Length: 146
Image (cartoon, rainbow, N blue to C red; front, side, top):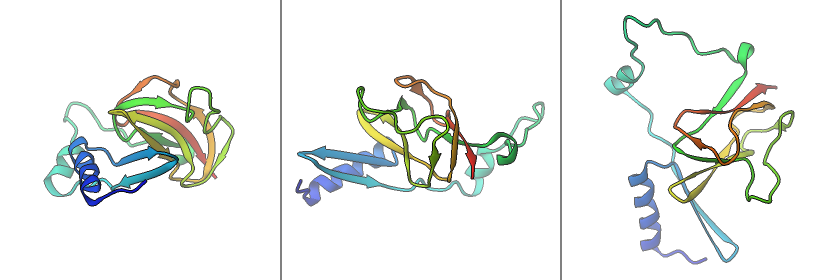
């Protein structure tokens, strides 16, 4: 697939406007992926996003030793365990995984976004049924780090 500069700019514009972190276009067995890292929260925005109400004590997040590591959805969409309805799931409970390995797909705005493992470990639990909607931050998998 030949991508001209105007088409690349349009993909980048769509990425910015949709708050997605990745867009992938596939045509005639060619694939182009445009990805960006989300901007970190800094300053006042960061302190506002972690503030808790005084009436509700904040609980520390579960430590990896007690509860494992969770893979969460980076955006709102539909969760798919396999690359196609007839395909085999990317991972199953008990599978060993490595960083960068594809775990699932979250479809958002008609775009299929692969969700990769960030840690090595073993899939302990799959928390969402394939084809179900997910929200930003929803837990998708529990991984026991190796």
